Amino acid sequence: MMQFYKKRDFGAFISDSFAFFKQYGKNYFKNYILLNGLLMIVMVAIFIFGYRELFMQIFGSNMSGESYYFESYFENNMGMFIGVGIVTFLLFMALMIVNYLFPVFYMKRLADGQTTIKTDDILADFKQNSGKIGKLLLGLIFIVMPLATIIVGVSYALIFVVIGFFILLLVFPVVINIINFLMFDYFNSSRGFFESLSYSIRSQFSYANNREGSPYWKYWGATLVLLIILYVITTIFTMIPMILFMLNLFTTAPDGNFEQNPFTGGFGVLIFVLYGVSTLVSFFLSNLLYVNSGLMYYDSRRDFHQKVELEEIETIGVNE
Image: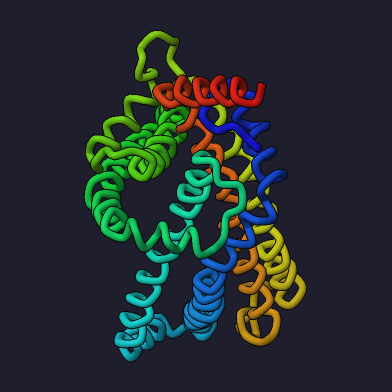
């Protein structure tokens, strides 16, 4: 069984993240799909048919030369757009809650010594922590995300200055770590939202005991490596429909004059189905990043390391 509360270095975070799925992956994704599968399918379906319709109208208005065609279409279907927008937002929020907190609850049970985890166990965690989940959601929406957007936005704006790229490179992984640490600490400790937020920030730069060096670089480096891995894989999946679309444009209208909307028919459906698949892939791959954050969080909890080590020593004494 994997040990969670222990000291890890940069390489161990990467290798143990993959080792986690090698050991627990079958059970992990079985529960993940049972809890999250329907939400993901509905979201992808909305994406495929909703965005396809939107792009068909945009592209169709450009083909016919009617500059106000899309504006008229939008005004005539305002109610539908608002309704779909609200449903999509609610589904997206539910999906994000389950997607973010599933690894938190799953890893917490493993860290507490549970060996076999069932879907009912995770559902029970969601029900028992419904109040805290609501507070976390409000805190993320109105406090954390606006601050994170400002910090990342300023860093991104500085890209026009050469040093801005390096600032963004340093800041972005840390922001991700802080948000993930916040969720892990909020449900793995008795701290309140602001206390957990404070801990998630402080733990990026120093351990609680202040007797060791800063963990900043190993946390930052492990997250950056996994972000690059995820980016490369998801880019491959998103490039496939883009390449097919461009090939279709060049083969059907080499002179730039389109006789029919390229988003109509079976090919248009195929393009958005492929984009839907790439979205699903990104959701599944994101779990690698969350598990890595969980391992970093357990590394930061040096107050629990000594407790676990003492329990192991007592167990050895009993076995002898």
